[in-house]
Image 1 (tube, rainbow, N blue to C red):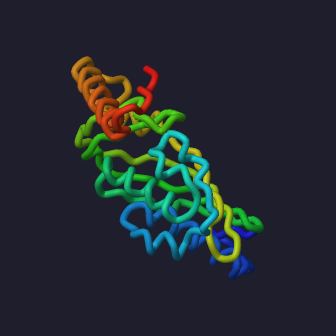
Image 2: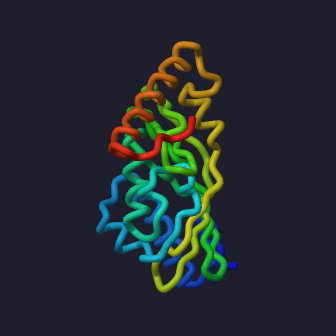
Length: 196
């Protein structure tokens, strides 16, 4: 196993370092990268296993889907940053232990299996800093798979989502209703109405 921490032994393989840097660049590109940046880092068939609760555009494969996830995050959070705490590479798998931070400046929308809004968290203006572990599979010098372990509860507590105050619950209900109406409008006439 190639350990890429700053105190790692000098026998770490250059290939492992390249995979670690590529994986870190993929995660950090979420903050401000363009579609072209993602094309340089992400395989055309790459899959983000965390996209289930994200917009429909994020659920596909390849650079465009990863870019869609980045745009979704940027809609809700300013000053996004991922700071590397530690990294380990074994074969084609890279594990990044990071701290994600940002500020909640726009609505954060969680989507259901049908890619329709199920919950909206209106902006609070608060900052957050949480630990995350990103698992990245690299093939032919590009990211081909991503999944993560995140401290979503810690983030929700720091942002005032949990436990929510009664006024914030009302703001959430109004924002969620507005997002659902907008989704129905975007479907056009004759489209089936979302359940719920």
